[in-house]
Length: 116
Image 1 (cartoon, helix red, strand yellow):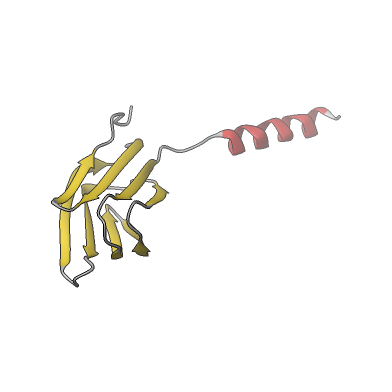
Image 2 (cartoon, rainbow, N blue to C red):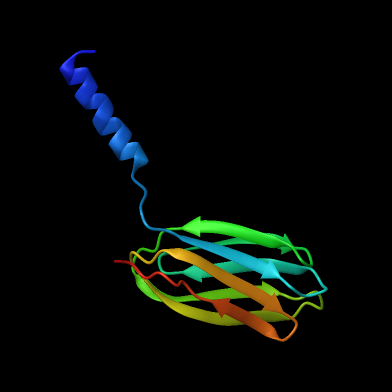
């Protein structure tokens, strides 16, 4: 392999191997009813799912750009809209975030590893 081609391959592998910090959110429906129209809003974007069955989970990874609180809105099986404010996120935060929907409300288990 020619030196220039070897150097280009090394740079390509280094770039592909780099991962930016991200949060992996896990939403858990620990109720006995389906949850509908889940939406998670975080600084600069949002994600969600149409429905989450009892006992089911929904995973989503995202990069935090900017800073602010994360929140969850959803609709219960008896058509009540609920909203829960979560932890403050700042750019570069990384790690897992559990969002547990219980019959009594939402429990947030925040990111244990803030950005470096």
